[in-house]
Length: 251
Ligand SMILES: C[S@@+](CC[C@H](N)C(=O)[O-])C[C@H]1O[C@@H](n2cnc3c(N)ncnc32)[C@H](O)[C@@H]1O
Image 1 (cartoon, rainbow, N blue to C red):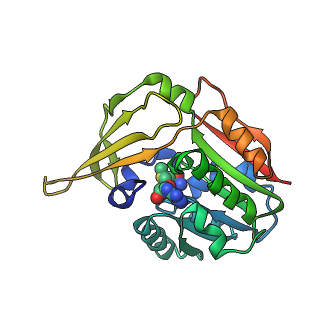
Image 2 (tube, protein in one colour):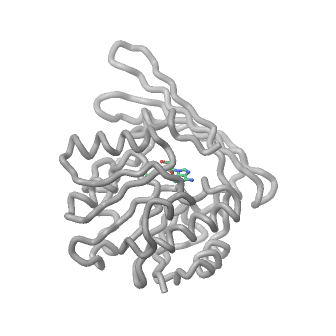
């Protein structure tokens, strides 16, 4: 199971402060966005609640936002309407993307915010990367961000209860992550995420989901990118740092 439908309702309590607004989210990718032609065609292939897609549309790009979760797609559409951003949405898992778009349709494909580990095992991940690669024009770029699973696995199974309430739109929430680390890399792992939000009348709304994920080593990811015709152009990977970004170019 790779659901996000329940968490979609409270997703802003899970986004970092720095990426809350569309403009801030897009600005995190300033360097690579600066390489794009005017009116570039870009796809955010796991758009979540749409901050990045709406931010990119605000920069004048032709944006498609896709996600496997119908509720996430609805949230993206709502955000686009609220901010008068023009974009197209498609509810599709990564492996379904080639059913919706011709090959070489995009200048840039994003897969960011700890998404790729939801692809089911090495074969699912390869199928996802293959889809993203097919959609890129020659010279186009995949922008991928990832947890450093080497570090996550080293920490073992654990409960991570944030010691501070997260405040969004004047409402506080307690966020809990429960990590279930399987003995072997290739096995299904789980992250259970719970958000307990205190509403104005004092009532507490709780949303939680048990998410499946399949971790990968950085080296494995590099080989997989290579095998689908993507050459790593830039990487911020550092085994001591909790996340990294990879930019890979379509041959
Ligand atoms: C951690 S969220 C990240 C969302 C957004 N990119 C962000 O940074 O806020 C992971 C997203 O991946 C989506 N997802 C999970 N499995 C997917 C799949 N097979 N294909 C496309 N999207 C998927 C989820 O629905 C969810 O919106």
